[in-house]
Length: 446
Image (cartoon, rainbow, N blue to C red; front, side, top):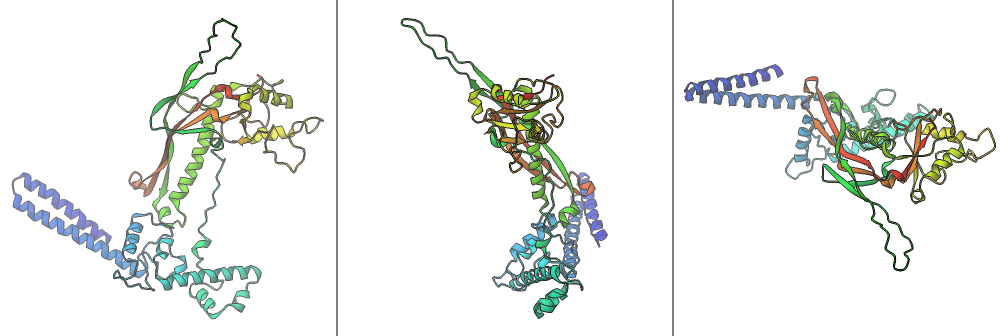
């Protein structure tokens, strides 16, 4: 049938091409006849296509997904029909046994797609709720004794299970028990953003003015004032675009019970956070955001090029000017934290932990710790010469400039040849070190 419909559409296109040629030759009357025939073929093809869809729905052969919301074009079309006929008749009369378009014939109401179940009649909704509760009872009883459910179940519960089950208790698990995605989030991202200064701009490029301090001193009688002109400067920024593309098969979108676009937005947010943290740490400041390792001030080198001592750490701490220590945090990696936790563990002296009851990720020297294990800082598992293991500083002096937040755009056509849907995810912004002196890098001796 699909082949016949396609032939009708191809014939209609051919007639239109012939009509154009006839018009060019001056035979308008012949062209009109071809146009009318082409219009009739298009109409017949559409009617045939609609009839095929209706037959599939009635026979239960329609390709039904289990999405929480309609995504595919056909799903949206059937859901729109449901919206128009939500009362079952379309005339203000509620039909308690109404089966919406998209209802999978032969399956329990409990495992219909969520967007279909929302528009089922009241009787079907009640049946779905009852089956879900019965299935839960069977599942709980089975963990205690395989036959307990069948000894204690009511006739209605037995009927509910037997109508759609095998002898082990259920072909069909209610949707709530399978609408779960096991997702590995990877390295946590966005750990620095809460401590930074975040501004939103409507411009592509711009700058933030800087204004230095002044000196204050005794002025002798009849003496001139000293020159106290503060140094004025600026920190410029350039809005850049970052993002990525995810290709998803049409079958996955149609058949997945999970909200795939929402899940993609979640993992994109995680990836964006990791990228932002990496840029805050080591961005080159030219084609990327400006990172601390590019601009911030180095702390004093360690005493040796193969170890970090408590004295080295305290030297870094006090190298940060006092005005920035009050709100300072420490940015480093799990590997370096693990190294610090072991400092002094074999000799008498200062220990990071006084007992195993304390969290090794807790405040160090009274300062919160932002831990990022992605690309950025050098690994501190084994200390090596010239490594940069982290930083301490007032991250309010690091500026994140947001132009446009993360956006997800769906394109059904660009990968249509492979029957895939493309999701294009991007955001625009920049990052700049406002005051380099507000940070000190944990630097190992060369």
